[in-house]
Image 1 (tube, rainbow, N blue to C red):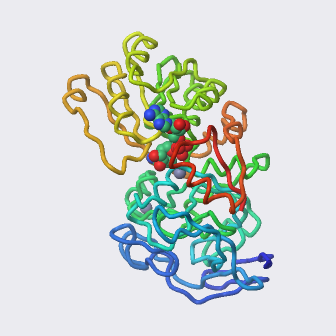
Image 2 (image 1 turned 120 degrees about the horizontal axis):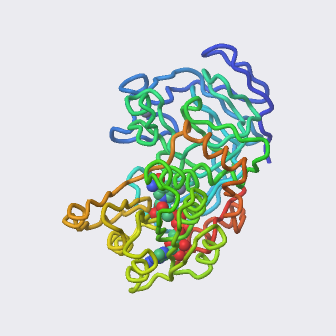
Image 3 (image 1 turned 90 degrees about the horizontal axis):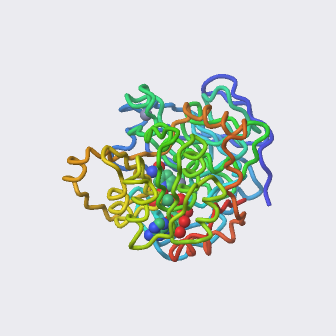
Length: 407
Ligand SMILES: NC(=O)c1ccc[n+]([C@@H]2O[C@H](COP(=O)([O-])OP(=O)(O)OC[C@H]3O[C@@H](n4cnc5c(N)ncnc54)[C@H](O)[C@@H]3O)[C@@H](O)[C@H]2O)c1
Ligand SMILES: [Zn+2]
Ligand SMILES: [Zn+2]
């Protein structure tokens, strides 16, 4: 095995005092260099475009052999394997985390299947994560080795028009671990734009719980609360009760909504009920009729928390006039919408993408007060060696509840 770094102190921009770490001369964080394989318009050249353009030293963690274990995808759709790969380094403006826990999200499965054009092979997936800072890049103030953190999977630049308006979840310069570059199904992961995105974990929150806040729980929080504007007393139907859907059930129920959970898996529906669903419906050809009856004419809000053309059609037919549909599940093959229905019924089609770091305090307060219990969603913890089989399992279906990996 190999040692972790013991301390890093940043004295001033470009000058780093190190103990137990190596210093590597490197390029800029935002230039699509080094580990960040950015294509298209996602990120401009170092210092160019809207990117912050921090340049300087790259900070690495010295190990006996500089290697770590990681799940490596070499071919889309072919079972990945656990391999020894190089430990990442902290670019200027970024950090490296020792990954303490990382969730298995269906987006990782989409990536593995080749549904994400940003992924370049070979690739390490993993984007829903929490950990301990192991190295701090030049120019990062306010964070030190040993800090316990999570991050939105959308690591925003903090410097573009969208970021400056508070919409980091749609930052055009965003970098996503596990998509744009190697992610957290590994012992260490690099995170760019640390000052914009890192979120300090409360002392009382364990890493398994915190990992989910990096993607699915936070995504559902924003979708239900901010994008969907769910209010007490509203009928809300969640189609698909995996990580996203069960989080949405818990959050909508905590807001006082009357939640109807839909899934093919009876075990997932049982969990949904325990997290606050008032009714559950086994997915079938009669699902729309059942929802219309349960809601007395249609729901106010529906959410596709799987990503399915059939669910989208059922969801839109389950809404009352002026209802809101939340699209969180990915639809790699697209979808055909009955636009006449959207117009005639004044339905809202609302896409929702992650949640920016500045929106986390409200969610963390609700967790601290016990109104939200993301820890209850975790039904399984596995090792890195078990990840290939767990990814493969998602092709056939989803085991009920959330799976967390401890690398
Ligand atoms: N928009 C975002 O920012 C964002 C963030 C995270 C995840 N996602 C996407 O959200 C989706 C859900 O992710 P997840 O990790 O929760 O998935 P998951 O695999 O954990 O859950 C999917 C659930 O859907 C159920 N299901 C399958 N067929 C169904 C049907 N016909 N009707 C109803 N339910 C059915 C499964 O039994 C399972 O419980 C994925 O597409 C993922 O990529 C999007
Ligand atoms: Zn995810
Ligand atoms: Zn930005």
